[in-house]
Length: 284
Image (cartoon, rainbow, N blue to C red; front, side, top):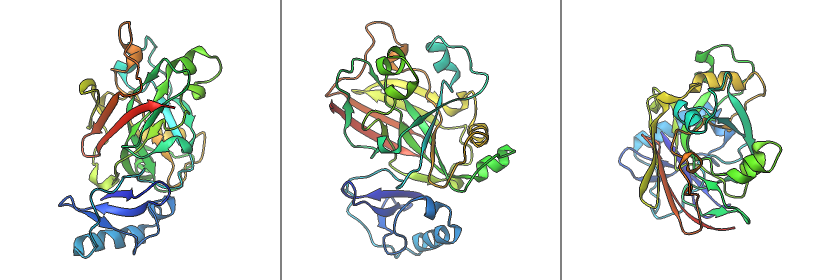
């Protein structure tokens, strides 16, 4: 299923994109797309049955699309998780996943405006596969257990300010948690529709020019290993999100003058089967 949330900011309603591409209203069935729903197999089964019945009311396709998950508890991110990206960054291949965090309030809709922070000169793009957790996960022991904890997948844009991240001391968090720095969606595609998360094309354009063109097959630590690993250090709850890293092609890895983002730039990104995002940059 392709689950999503549509409507104005703060007043989104749960919806489904059916097999014919028609936007369908779920608000009579469930209050929202959130961790409680993703952990409720009976509720998900009711949604599947209603979708197949063809009785769900249609919605205006012109509605704004919000982030596909409400009430996210935490956003866990994996750094340097593609072989080609580690190489372009001049970094050694990590021996273990690099973990950092983004605050849930960085999450916005897939087509919402992204704000260039005040004083920023190195705002960068990163298209990423997001994993959405569907059951409580702690100390997972196997890849099978890890994948069983996944509710679905989405497109994420891990926007980053490199000067804040790298040149201002401390941890990466300063360059990762600026306002609007995690567009998510358009859809949460349930795990049953993504049989192999390591076989997805992943791409990003800036002002119509292709900048990133990779595949999740290049991940150093695949999805199952990432989920299993993270669960050794923190409990994952339904509705939590893991951003699994970006392929090569970011501005930071390009020759000088590096083409960092500015107000007015347009970023578009997509992952096979998971939909497409489009953001216009503006001054923060």
